[in-house]
Length: 111
Length: 117
Image (tube, rainbow over all chains, first blue to last red; front, side, top):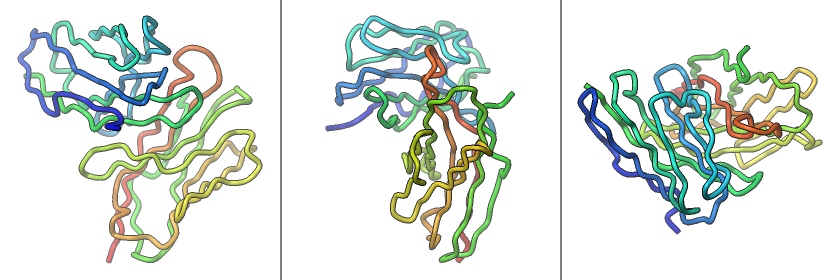
């Protein structure tokens, strides 16, 4: 039982490049979400999903796309990377009203 | 208005002493949950403790307890007998029972705790 896994751990992009941050969970959780963490601002919700095929926007969705084709996977796509997207990205999952479990994070630097 | 407010950017505590990390929240919902997470320098988010709005007793998990004062809308984390390994950033978070993104966690800005030997 690996919990929530994220790849890659680190990534450097140039402005305008696109990439996908991967997130997977093996706990059969319905709810999955993506957060970004910037210094002094805590974690902010980007997108979330309440089940396969259902996604919705969080607090800071601009510049990001998500899809949820399976219960296990919830990738986050950066369409055209900008320096403002330099951050640490966390994926999380939970079952119903249960505790939210976080992945180890992806550190992204956009030059 | 901030949904979660942590007014202490940094705190110091002597090893073996107790420390209280403050958290106040803002919600009009009657049903909600409050969470505390620990983030050590390695970066992972570690769940510590949970308090439901209808729970009559304060939550406890080992050396962690949550001082829940519903009328004041505060959910302070108390760490007893601090250890050097408790040095980390601590985040308070809330999940409301409303629909939409409010059902996901909203985080405070965190408190950096340093335990002194």
